[in-house]
Image (cartoon, rainbow, N blue to C red; front, side, top):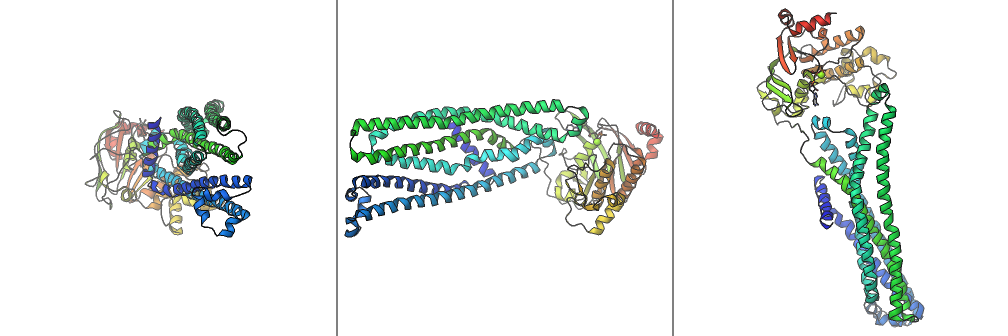
Length: 604
Ligand SMILES: Nc1ncnc2c1ncn2[C@@H]1O[C@H](COP(=O)(O)OP(=O)(O)OP(=O)(O)O)[C@@H](O)[C@H]1O
Ligand SMILES: [Mg+2]
């Protein structure tokens, strides 16, 4: 138990270090909490003389009391002689202490809230930056739903123990102050009370252990629920077309049910803490009264104020004890989420693609592939020993059956995945030596699936570019053969398009993507053609847009429709990740090999 408690603190400190928050800042709210707790203790201590004087109708005993007596002896004689005056002074002192206590408490809450919100913000920000730094392969292998649960929910649950630290500190120090007052009032009674509190502590400890185990299972189910929600919402067309609404609903219901049951179990265990605590408090109070009866006798009036204050402390202490137990419950609940958050901070299996330090200043001669082999999953090569050249200013076409590895080649050129060392050269330099910023700036990709953001058409076309003039925008739209389409939109370029561009057709999306590439004015253009069949009008528009885009540019075009590449300078035919033919259109047709077969097939 003890080592685990320490290890969660170790983990928390590690997390704080990762997000560059110095835990020393916590000392401010903690010190304010301590002062507030001590002021409360002194305040309660003052209750004894107040009640005593009230019952005895005389405050003369004050002068003999330790500590307070010293203060009162300095007062002038007329005040000391006036009972009401003394009572007033005591009462004012008591009230002032409580006001001061609450002021300190309030500022400690303000500080801890500020610290908490800043910490949470830093954690989210850092987690997000981490995600953006991971390679694409990481996202291929994990689930987006999990990451959204982690960013939105787990990050805050993991930090909750820190958010409640002021409550813990204040409770612990109040308990210490109470203990001091209790011993001051009667050490014998306190010896009766303490073991009963110890029993309470042991019961709570058992509960907390159980909650901690459930926390991990709960985090797992929360994760599953997030995954399923995002997955279903992201694949609605598939679900609609396969009529699996019922099945998905059932799966979702099952996961949600499991999570609800676990939540319930955690809640009833947590809820058990409070009643147990109250019952034990009453037992403690009863024990104290019995003890008082035995030691002081029934009618001793002098002990009445002590007993009242003592009972007041016991009930208060039980509340503070509740706060400590609550904190332990929260801490137990943070175990699962904290582990999941920390997993994002370890750097293994995140598939980073790190660029080099060289600035890419433009292609001079050619992009050369040298014996390139590549696998997504270890041991299963998708590309085998590929060697070829892509000459500057020319159009190079890559053709081949589906699954041949064409898009994989593009993925490597786009630096989505890291290629092996010395396998792709830009002029004489390994592609890995160029900084990603300078390289990607000069490369544009029109991909098979155009991703669009929920924003205006204009912002979507200009995405990632700093300043785009109206004139440039107009020209790009025109060259991408989108003018007619834009003119037909209710608000032209300012029209909002759906989350993933659902309001655009495949052909329109592809032209938006071409407009993006044209606007970027990249010197290397990569086109990964969509396989979807298009009507002849759209096909002509796209063909015109592609011709426009590839003119006087180094271009790499993956084409399924061979008409797209009839003007290509070089054609590479890839099959099963191997280069099987290479040459000009006519040359390959004359050779009557695979390209010829593909060409003949498409004639009809
Ligand atoms: N992220 C990935 N993780 C694991 N395997 C992958 C991944 N992406 C592609 N593959 C595999 O790599 C092989 C080549 O895929 P690739 O997408 O490069 O084919 P392609 O030639 O572009 O096909 P298409 O013409 O259908 O677009 C396929 O067998 C595919 O299953
Ligand atoms: Mg492909």
